[in-house]
Structures are given as C-alpha cells and as structure tokens.
Length: 290
Length: 297
Image 1 (cartoon, chains in turn brown, yellow):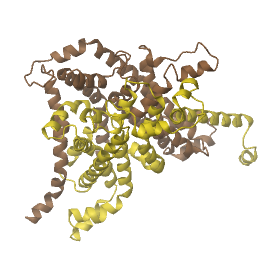
Image 2 (image 1 turned 180 degrees about the vertical axis):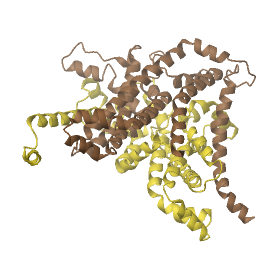
Image 3 (image 1 turned 45 degrees about the vertical axis):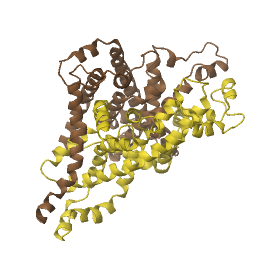
C-alpha cells in the first residue's frame, strides 16, 4: 500500500491542477464553441442551430471594423515595437556608461497596467488641454493633434500608447540576445576590418532569428488580447472606430446580452491565436525533445 | 607586425567617431524623454490645481504644488454612485492579489517539481496542455466562467477573483518552476531516494531551499499580472468588490460632474505605485520573468 502510494504520489499531486486545466481551459473552450452554434441571447441555450452566429458576425459592420482594426493595430504595433526595440538594443549595446539607468527608463512602462497607460495617454492626447494645446501655446496656432477624437485616426492613437508600453520589453529581449552572440566571432570580424554596421546586419541580427520569433509571438498575443488599453484610452470610440475583437466580445457578452455573438467572436479570436501560437509551441516543444 | 602596433598607438577616436558618439547619446536621451514624458506629465498634473491645468501648459512644472488631488483620489472621488475614493478598491486589489499570487506560486512549484523530476508517462503531454492554457485569449472562457462562479456561489466576490487568477496563473507558474527544476541534475533526486527520502521530503529539504531566485521571479510576475489585470476584474466583480484598475477606469471615464484631470492622474499613479515599486526594487527579477515568459520550452 505505501509502496503504491509512493509510486503514485507525483501523479496525485499534479492531478488537481491537471483537472482544473482540463475543465477551466478545455472544457470551457468546448462550452463556448458549443454555445456559438446556438441561438443564445440573454441566457445560454444548448440546442445546436448551425453557423448562424458566425453568419451574423461576419455580416456585422461593427465586427468588420474590429477585425480591420486588429490588423491595422496589430501590424503597426508589432512592426514598430520590433524595429524600435531592436534599434534601442543596438544603441544600448555600444558600451554606454549609463546603460543600467537607461534600460530601467525604457522598460518601466511594462510594469504598468494598461488602464494606467491609457489614462495617461488619454490626458496627453486630449486635444483641448494636451499636446495640441501646448504646441499651440508655443505659437503654432494651426497645429492639430486630435487623433483620439478623430474616428479615422483614433486607432493610431492606440498604437502610440501600446508601442510606448511594450517596446522597452522588446528592447530587453534583443539586448539579451545581442549579449549572447559569440564575442570571438565579432572580434574576428573586427580584426578583418569589417565595418560595424556590416557586423550587425550580416552576423549579429541574423543570429537572433529565434528572438525575433519570440518577440513576435508575445506582441501578437498582446495585440489580440488588447482590451484594457482601448477601454481606457478611447472606450472603443468614437462610435466604434477603435473596437477590437476583444471589446466587441465584451460588449456582446456583458452589455448587449447577446451570448451567441459573444461566443462566436471569442471562438474567432481563439482561431487567430491558434494559427500563430500552435506552430510555435509545437516547434519549441519538438526542438527540446530531439 | 609594425602595422599591428601602429593601430594601437594611433589616436583612439577620430572626429567622426566622436560625433557618432554624441549622436548616440543624443538619441538615447531623446528616447529616455519619450518614455519618461507620460510619467512626468502624470506627476506634475496631479500636483496642480484645476485652474492651473486649464490655463497652463501640459509640460510646465506646477506653480503652486498642492496635494489636494491626491487626497481626493485616495478617499473622496466618485466611482459611480459611491464617493469614497480609490482606497477601498486598492485594498480589494491587495486582498485579491496576495492569496492569488501565493496559491499560484505554490501550485506551480509543486507541479514544476513533478514534471521536471518525477517524469511519468504522459507528463509531457500534461505539461504541453497546461502551457497551451497560457496562450488562450481569455475571452473564450469569460462566459462559462461567469456561470460557473455563479454556481459555486463566488459570483462578484473577491474569493471568486482569487479563484480565477489562480486557475489561469498555474500554467505560467508551472512553466517557470519546471524550466528551473529541469536544470537540477536528476542524480540528486535519485541519490535522495536511495537514502530513503520520499517525494515531499526531497521537495522540502532539497528543492525548496534551491528555489529562491525562481520564487522571486514567479511572485513578481504573478503580482504584476494580477494587480494590473482588468478583464477578469471588470467581468467578475460587482459594486464594492472591484479591483483598483476597474475603479480607476470608472473614475476616469465617469461622465458626471466636472472633469478633474489632476484627480485622474493622482488616481492613476496610486493604482500604478505597487507594481512600479516592485519594478524599481527588483527590476532584475522582473526582466527575468518577462524573458522566461516569452522564451518557452
């Protein structure tokens, strides 16, 4: 008996967490997937009716805007954060005396809640009292910076705040990558008289491909889940100009009482995450086992 | 050979190199300003009177420093109907975060220990399944979780929020500990087993004492995530049990009354202080958590 116990203790210790994940991750995904196939409104119904919710979703102009915004926001946010992060990492890698202090300054936004970030930038970009008013008071009377209230530009205001928050993190990832490049190779290249920019573009940056991938995955994941920032910065507005799939889902679930729409939009979000994360996780886990 | 020594005796930096060096510092300084500007604006705005905000400039230092906005934000400003400031919600966040961080870290440590050191058939699959749980968009679990919390009698309560944060935290905490314990040679466990030590004894006397760095990393990671969470907070709380992030958003986006920007900024800083403090004190571990959370496997 004790020997049996001894042998099975590890499994029993792991079991509660495993069961919890089974129910609260996989069970819940199945539940949401099921409900997305029903006519649920205020209360969930369990009678399957086919893909009507998805038809409604794809026919909805608001969802269209949300998906367009996701691609605009995601593309710009990921692209700019990667470029800026790499650029800052290379600058910081030039044996700077104040490196520690600068790194701390570049990275601190990552410790803030997106609600705090949104609150701060909402104030800064406030047309009446923020940057616009300040630059005008300097004598540039016609200066306008009203992105946050302009339906066509508001999503770019969200990009600015998001880049401010996450680019320092990308910098930290790249800086760690730069430091792990073999010093000997760089020294050999320097001795051969290869200019610094060539050393970066031909040796160092290509060797950091895995870090690009990790940073991309994390940023893409952040972009798809972005919810707090939009809520705090624009509330999805003006109108629903800055709606993202996450805010659409929330509105359907908790203010519109349209559970079927909420479930189907959540499943589409899940699909987008899957297509990005699953190949990555698979290759990572495979690489470890080989 | 002569060439070689000459390159060392030549002047260290040419004019061009010096100019480049200055450009480098100028760029680094500009970016530092970009990252610091919002914090600067938040702090200065929170110390100004409303009158000064309306007439003055965004980037100007306060003429008359006043802490009135801070005391209003802490104990007087209105979130919806109640006007008792951010204080009760700040404590809600403390009450929610501390137990959730403790439980998720504890479970992660034990899980990571099993997966890394007591491999059994299927352990890797279980690990992969838990890891996957870290990546789902939480929107996909919001609806069933809202119903389940209702069934469990935890709807709108702080214990309910603790429960949710622990459940969706164990994936990451398990990952952190598993990756740390994998680097500890299996011979250590084997030798201890030969000496007659059991599962818990080995964990308690060998692994736990070695775990301080990873415990710090995990606690900071969990603390930052849970304190800063908004989605679960806004979905699963009700009037009176909201965490500080939700209350902050209610204050800032309330449409009634005069907009008090100085109070908004003071409230935002109050909500941000705990995680900022952790970052300043233990930034090294914060970065380690971020990188561990992104470089998986």
